Length: 94
Image (cartoon, rainbow, N blue to C red; front, side, top):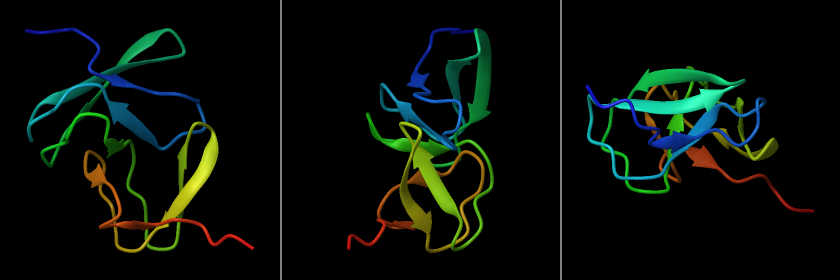
Protein backbone atom coordinates (compact mmCIF):
# COMPACT_ATOMS: atom_id res chain seq x y z
CA UNK A 1 0.00 0.00 0.00
CA UNK A 2 1.28 3.46 -0.94
CA UNK A 3 1.86 5.62 2.16
CA UNK A 4 3.20 8.76 0.47
CA UNK A 5 1.80 12.20 1.27
CA UNK A 6 -0.42 13.31 -1.60
CA UNK A 7 -2.21 16.26 -0.01
CA UNK A 8 -1.21 19.15 2.26
CA UNK A 9 -2.89 20.80 5.19
CA UNK A 10 -1.74 24.40 5.48
CA UNK A 11 -3.26 25.37 8.85
CA UNK A 12 -4.89 23.37 11.65
CA UNK A 13 -8.01 25.58 11.30
CA UNK A 14 -8.52 24.49 7.66
CA UNK A 15 -11.44 22.24 6.77
CA UNK A 16 -9.94 21.39 3.37
CA UNK A 17 -6.61 19.97 2.19
CA UNK A 18 -4.96 20.55 -1.17
CA UNK A 19 -4.14 17.58 -3.43
CA UNK A 20 -0.54 17.73 -4.65
CA UNK A 21 -1.29 15.22 -7.39
CA UNK A 22 -4.43 14.10 -9.21
CA UNK A 23 -6.44 11.72 -7.01
CA UNK A 24 -9.12 9.39 -8.37
CA UNK A 25 -12.32 8.72 -6.43
CA UNK A 26 -11.79 5.99 -3.84
CA UNK A 27 -8.12 6.84 -3.21
CA UNK A 28 -6.94 7.94 0.22
CA UNK A 29 -5.75 11.53 0.54
CA UNK A 30 -2.76 11.38 2.93
CA UNK A 31 -1.47 14.41 4.80
CA UNK A 32 0.21 15.36 8.06
CA UNK A 33 -1.59 17.08 10.89
CA UNK A 34 0.21 17.79 14.14
CA UNK A 35 3.00 15.39 13.19
CA UNK A 36 0.55 12.53 12.57
CA UNK A 37 -0.40 10.95 9.24
CA UNK A 38 -4.11 11.46 8.55
CA UNK A 39 -6.21 10.03 5.71
CA UNK A 40 -9.50 10.93 4.07
CA UNK A 41 -11.18 8.82 1.39
CA UNK A 42 -11.64 10.90 -1.78
CA UNK A 43 -15.20 10.63 -3.12
CA UNK A 44 -14.72 12.56 -6.39
CA UNK A 45 -11.88 12.78 -8.88
CA UNK A 46 -9.65 15.56 -7.55
CA UNK A 47 -7.47 17.51 -9.99
CA UNK A 48 -3.94 18.40 -8.91
CA UNK A 49 -3.87 21.42 -6.56
CA UNK A 50 -7.63 21.30 -5.90
CA UNK A 51 -9.27 21.08 -2.49
CA UNK A 52 -10.75 18.10 -0.64
CA UNK A 53 -13.24 18.49 2.23
CA UNK A 54 -11.98 17.17 5.57
CA UNK A 55 -15.43 17.21 7.14
CA UNK A 56 -19.06 17.64 6.16
CA UNK A 57 -19.70 21.32 5.42
CA UNK A 58 -23.32 22.44 5.51
CA UNK A 59 -24.83 25.13 3.27
CA UNK A 60 -23.72 28.66 4.30
CA UNK A 61 -20.93 27.28 6.51
CA UNK A 62 -17.39 28.67 6.10
CA UNK A 63 -14.59 27.02 4.15
CA UNK A 64 -11.07 27.63 5.47
CA UNK A 65 -7.75 27.24 3.66
CA UNK A 66 -4.42 28.80 4.70
CA UNK A 67 -6.13 29.49 8.05
CA UNK A 68 -8.35 32.04 6.28
CA UNK A 69 -11.92 32.12 5.11
CA UNK A 70 -11.97 31.40 1.36
CA UNK A 71 -15.72 31.06 0.94
CA UNK A 72 -18.92 29.45 2.09
CA UNK A 73 -20.71 26.32 0.97
CA UNK A 74 -23.55 26.88 -1.51
CA UNK A 75 -24.61 23.23 -1.32
CA UNK A 76 -23.87 20.45 1.17
CA UNK A 77 -20.29 19.18 0.92
CA UNK A 78 -19.46 15.73 2.26
CA UNK A 79 -16.12 14.62 3.67
CA UNK A 80 -13.86 13.64 0.75
CA UNK A 81 -15.72 15.76 -1.84
CA UNK A 82 -14.01 18.02 -4.35
CA UNK A 83 -14.30 21.62 -3.09
CA UNK A 84 -14.33 24.21 -5.88
CA UNK A 85 -16.52 26.92 -7.41
CA UNK A 86 -19.32 24.41 -8.05
CA UNK A 87 -20.00 24.11 -4.31
CA UNK A 88 -18.51 27.22 -2.64
CA UNK A 89 -18.90 30.96 -3.12
CA UNK A 90 -16.04 33.36 -2.44
CA UNK A 91 -16.61 35.90 0.32
CA UNK A 92 -18.02 39.30 -0.67
CA UNK A 93 -15.48 42.10 -0.81
CA UNK A 94 -16.53 45.48 0.54
